[in-house]
Length: 248
Image (cartoon, rainbow, N blue to C red; front, side, top):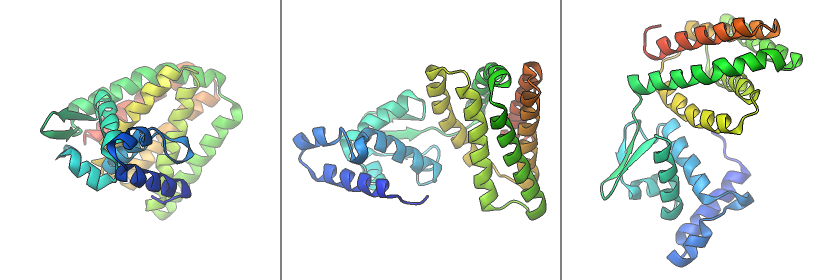
């Protein structure tokens, strides 16, 4: 992941906060460069550690180990850990350590059940209200990627493009509801989804299958057929659940 000037500012601010006295530190942990709260930076660092495998799924670590590994001061780290515990990403064991969630059958099933409930309702709205150009743009991007993978095979750039398309499509569907409560809940659920995908082996046939399921959804939306769009979303999630469970 590339470093930006904003990242550098945040790192410098975090380091400064860590070096200050406890009394000063309680104030310094409020905000970082650009107005970002240090607890929010800590939250993102912890998730990045999981997604980049610095922290293995299911890891049991101490608070001090997290401070050293992620370069986060104690005060904002504690705030972030409490939020992540409430979101189900980890469990805090007092005087013992922090246990990160390990994806398994139950988390996989619950994640896709949640997605199905929310997106089956959202896709009906999207199919009826989405801008025509937005639908066609998503279709073109999917078709171009399908063609590239069929010709060149699957490479790292294609995997990044698949992730971007996945985010673009499902984000557009969710935001069509215009409901911030749903959007916030879905954003947290997406963390679970990324954890599940860490254990998934992707091949060209599996990726192409996913992209073509997306195209079926978009085709129904372009036809302004909410029933067909809902059916296509349900078929996509059923197939995706089977892939995540290794049933293919």
